Image (tube, rainbow, N blue to C red; front, top):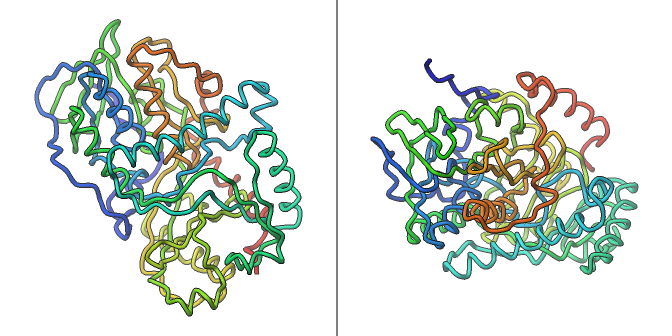
Length: 445
């Protein structure tokens, strides 16, 4: 019986070079020939982004034989085109929601994992001498309504309980801090930093190769057969028999590869607009000079930061269609939002725009754990747009699992639910985005 064709929920445009053609980050390069012929390996890792490369690096450093298979090339997907926010996150449930479901101990353990994820990225950058153009001591969340400011005060108390005081900034003090805009105040969260994701993922790829991992580009896995003690992977040019398997494809996954994965992730397009380099006078005219990475309190949030070279990066979500026409419409919408939120930059040129796929879980939590009932295959995915740190950390934990090291992750390893009617799950986004826009209201003016 021939293998089933992989099924992706977006149009081909979302998985093409066109979607990232104007990305400003350097595209990772390396000697990554497509795998050909028959191979037997200790661990096969599918996906060459932060999660897969981190898993491969940690496995290879422990002496494991590991091969990374990527459909296009390491760093080609979301890991090489995101906003570069290395910060806490990975979920959309929130600490209060996690506490209600799992209890205080699990909530503190999850927060500790978030902190450890940021620290792991910093450690990898230092240990492997990766120049990722880091900046920003923490991140800034900005209230888009007075009610949102009330929520930030509650969040400040939550941070204090966790032993990490966060700084609340009233609206009247934002301008003097270089955070001028139509916001009702902000909260500086004391963990995380910004980086150049292209440089970071390139550094991870080099480090994994140097440690002994084999990286293969143009090697899409189209079918997986699970056995009692091995997994047989099929690509257009190779057949790989692996004792252990790690799947790290996140938003670029395919239903049916393997069957367990079908419907357990929901890709969402995230989009980034970047201005030309701003002059000091232009920066002063708007009054946004902070180097903090920032985002607003909307459901369909905007995320933004002033880059070290003076360009302004502005990101958002909210488009459902994946096409050149849909990308053009989203670009125009984001240009309007940028003008509304930062009016002094209304007429500034924005020569760069691109999109990529993040991924959500049905229960709004990341996942790191076994694939079904297998004891030799694991997956890490669904970081809800915060994969720089959490994806890196998850890769290290998946390596622990493959090396039979004890790893207790009470939040991450709960059973990963499927979306109801998985073949139709992309349609959920239409209603969700309309509802979020109504709830969020227009961009601040």
